Amino acid sequence: DSDFGQPVDCFCLVYFGRLSPEKNLEFAFERLSDFARGHPNLQVRYDVIGFGTDEYIAQLKTLVEKMPPNLRIDFIGQLSSAALHFWLSEPSKSQDASPRKRTSYKAMLMPSLTENFSYTILESLQAGIPVLVSDQTPWRDLSAKGVGWDLSLEALDSWRQALETLLRQSSIQEFDRQQSALKFAKEWVVAYASKAEKLFD
Image 1: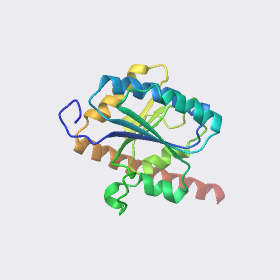
Image 2 (image 1 turned 90 degrees about the horizontal axis):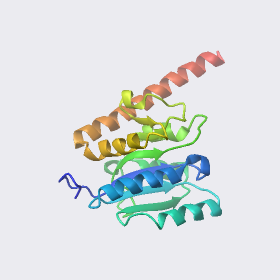
Image 3 (image 1 turned 180 degrees about the horizontal axis):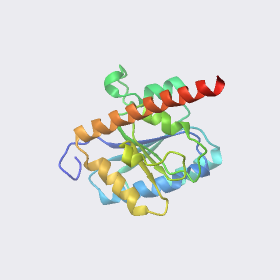
Image 4 (image 1 turned 135 degrees about the vertical axis):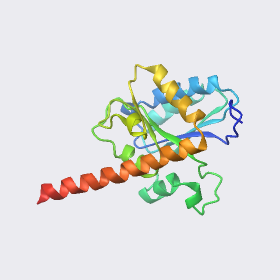
């Protein structure tokens, strides 16, 4: 159970993409570690999906050994596009009964040091998963749009507050955030397609 009396199987977040230093996963581990220590009765999980060098992954796994016992960080490995789509899909839309299938991701957590565009943000929103990212991507004003947060890496309290908001939200608020993510992603794709069509004309 969560600290707020609501049954929570797992406070689950996800990352997918390349595993490289510029993705700043160490920062994500630190924020989740602090959050988990503040909620010792809450099971926190962070699924890390993607590929990287053996050396870098070993560095990350060394950090995981120092995490609090109620924080579980799983390295899923690289998935095909189809497998990733299936993995991110809502459980209610999936026939998969595998114990490794997610319950429900509260957000995609990616505190990048730099991003040119980041298709993973769009893919997350297309799956109805809000995003919790740094302000070093082109995706901005996400909180005002109701689809996540873009935060300064120096504002540590803001990251904690965003996680607290995700934890405290009601099932209705969570559903609304998911629907906002889906709507935003769909409208973005339509607008981009229209711009591309005009460009090629």
